[in-house]
Length: 294
Image 1 (tube, rainbow, N blue to C red):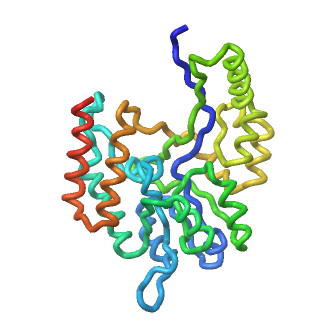
Image 2: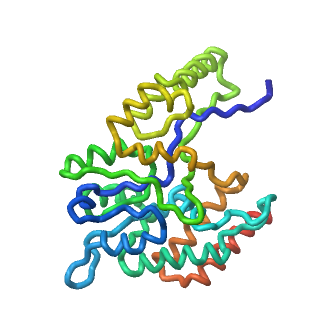
Image 3: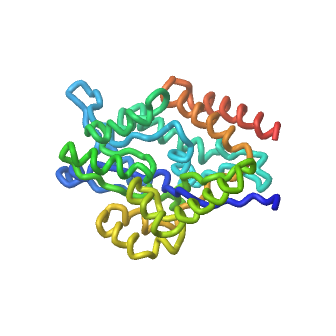
């Protein structure tokens, strides 16, 4: 009837902190619950050779997507926009610059690897599996990849909600499904039945168990099947206990244009030697042009 409806089909916690629980247990490394604790954690989790070259990063960050690194900023008090009309970005604020300087310091010291560019996701995943990263910030949707892969290498995977700062927050990742207006009535009916199955506990659990995605409804979350899944995978409880701390990403109609400018700008600062002030200035200029066009 001329209306557009949205139904969540796949929901994920971004970022989810995966770590090598075997290393943590053997080396007495505690997973940081706050960003204030993160520096000390990195220095204990990072391993360097006799020449000072990093052989195991304390943490690798997914620098290619704002859903993965954005919450680092949100938790430390950064606002994506400084006004309700979303015409002025806060990504160049003093708090944002402080976060950038914090991350750059870790990257420059070889404590953190900022993953960006070709095969960044594959390389980051492999670094955790191989043990060349103690931890990575990714999505809960790939739990089914990390858990068996680490087990094959004799490691146990750990799962944690990202550290807290001024806020405790993660982005809501995932996707939805669309029924096209030009589909036939039979196709629309079939698609509706599939979506209905997918968002009921039975179908939702199929997705959850095959991936690591989160329940899309309270009904599924509270179902016996979901409770049994968490009992069988106790590390996931660290995410399920934070369901109320997962929020949608900034809802600007041009966020999909802004986010790449942000990730490109950070990559230039962290990986290409651009100084923080110049990099932020260039990044904000590009973002403001997008906002002006809006």
